[in-house]
Structures are given as C-alpha cells and as structure tokens.
Image 1: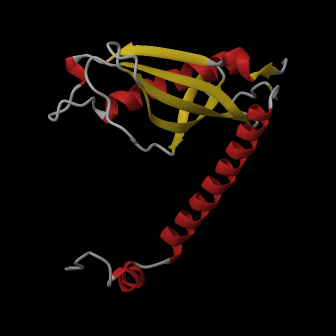
Image 2 (image 1 turned 90 degrees about the vertical axis):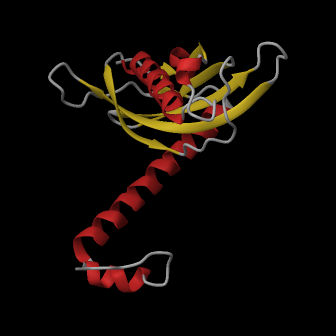
Length: 182
C-alpha cells in the first residue's frame, strides 16, 4: 500500500443553498450543512483509503455564521491525520454571496472516519505524506485532538460505570437543574 499525499485526496464540494434547505427563520438548517460535511468527509477519506469509509465521530462543529438561501456553500476537506484504519478529515466551510462576491467562513470541523474491508472489518489506510509546514501542523493538531478525545471517552466511561446517580446528584445540585427523583 503506497503512501499518499494530502493533495491526493483533497476534496471540495460546492452546493447552492435552496429554499428547501431553510429552517423557520429562513437560514439553512445546520443539519443540511452537517450532511454536506459528512459527504465531503466520506469522499476525501475514500479517496485516501481506496475503501468504503464510515463516520466514527465529529468534533469542533460550531456554527460561526448563518448561511442564507441563495448562497453557494463550499466545503473543503483534507486528510489531516492517519492512524492504522482511521483518518481525521479537516473541513472548512465557506459561503459565497454570488451577487457581491463576499465570502464568509461559516465553520470548520473534524470528522474521524475509518476504512472498512468488504466484510466490514477495519482496513489499514495508507500513510500520509506531509509536504508542507501546514500539513505538518495539521497532522500534529489532529493527533492531539485524537488523544484528547480518547481522554474524554475514558473519563466519561469511568464516570458512568463508577458513580451512582446519588453521587452525581450531589455534584450537580448547585447547577441550573431541579432534581426530582421518585
């Protein structure tokens, strides 16, 4: 399996935001944008791995600016990190107002994808060739993201297994909640 560069799988998808995508306030639904992000992450991961890929997690989704009907939304994706079977795909979303040419960065996020064999088992992915300082920086940041995600998962798993609802209730009682156990 030959290593591949970041540029080998870099992918951009552009889509016109139509009225059907709008929510009650006339802005594009966040779910529509998430669906487009998932699509571009899949294409990017499949191009790198040469395999069917599935989404494992999504990190850092924060809708910075609303997207309007009539705008063109471009989603640029690149493989930022590879593990054995996993890839972290960085995505930058920008909207373009066709009449004015104004471009707005609406959000960025990270999709962790894994490659699968025909039988559904995990498949090893090619190593990633880093050809720029930006590639190196993104690989490092994505590696740190993966480590932090693992730490959070471990904390959440331990807390779920070892703390009773009563202990947790004592810890959260001074927060904005009403505990009404029956």
